[in-house]
Length: 146
Image (cartoon, rainbow, N blue to C red; front, side):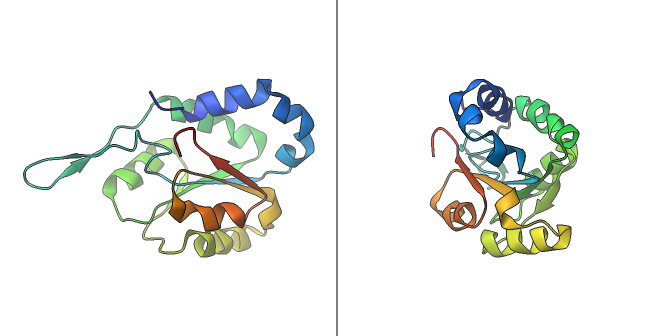
């Protein structure tokens, strides 16, 4: 079973990392997320007709529901265009940016629209196409199986 976002936030609160870096974490005002491999198991089921399906953890909603109370905005950044991503973002009540050929540029545009400096942003990813975006923010997080 993949590491869910609620596991991530719960374990973060208990870890030494938090106590050593509380100020840095407290400064985070926005979190960007890749979709495939972060919100999903990173597996895709393909039918004979070519339709794709993915599995998402419902636990992610619990973790994400904590963010607004902390004053943190969230968004999904996906390279592809997929209705599943839009529907999941809508269900989670977070913004969704798809067809992001360059996630770091799109993240920078979003931060600028919110008047938030990159040092006050985090990005959670799992693949090589997330690295540039992870390097462009104040806190980079790679999921367990990245």
